[in-house]
Image (tube, rainbow, N blue to C red):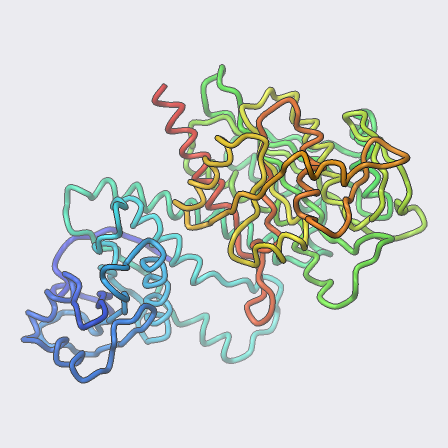
Length: 505
């Protein structure tokens, strides 16, 4: 997709398609009003016939509208004007690009960024338009070798060039900056989606490490990959216990984006990288087990976020840690009842080998101490219990610091990648007691997502920490099966806000 920024009246735009908004009750946006006046009330007359009610997501394509220079005018429903918000804006953008792509148009000029969206700036509106458009047009067909006729046709059609119209030339630089932000974020989200969507026989721990190295070479940040022998010397017995049943060698990826002041303590992101999770000896049911290729989406989100902040050249020190391996059953695999010794020295009784994500994360969280971090945020498809609690809309957020939790919640609201703050009171900690080790790796069925977070909290005593459980938000099932790229938008917004704050000090 080729983007550009432009100004000018909607009716004077040349090309295949002009996109304008219409509110409910036949209220026209400024751009739609401009076309209506140039066409002697043509749009108003169409609306009076009831062809478009203005409800959000509704679209109507008009051809050869009098008084206009464009071949088509696409009307997009905006819903009630009094309720038009950030979410409605993104819905309208998504609906518009899908409707335009379904036509014969190959280029379009969208006037939706001129709409007032609460207190959001031109930069925000332009960034989100680019992000939503690229998300809506994302396709994953890297593995397919033969496409059917419908797929071939769809690939050839669609908008190849999109101009984003803004009302005032004085906002041009802000719009250009927003466009750059949106494209950078979309690139990171696409990378996270791609990695999640790849089959597990391709996206192995070795493959993830190779992608990290490629990113580092391309953008100029340091990448170190620790192999099994180094992990053994570090005493990462918990991490290594998970990988015992797999033929694939484990990898521990360390990425360092150091663009802040030397004195600035880094933000550390830790991503769970189980490239396939059978459950181990505690084998999962066969139904939908193929989706366990998405158990590395925490790792994918860290890689995606690093791509985005590298493209932004974000002036902040950020470290990414990715423990990655498979969880497979064989004669060497860890058994329920085994006791593992973590890097921290704490012993862990493994009561369920399917609670493996916390076992690789705990060693990574201990490793994070050496960077003397300002904060640590781990991202993991950790528990099915979180899906039961929050469904597929909100990411579960746990933290040992309320101020950090508020930062992440605000970032999620701004990025439209929302999280929900879950409790992690000391009352839950005794559920992890073990008769044979310092801690058990599960706390029973009740409050499963909370006890998983409580487990991780035992390894984060030396810094401020937050845990994002993305089990319900990292991918979609069913007809739309595929990675979502979440929470790259949340993490990016969080890091950008931190960088802005650091530069003001």
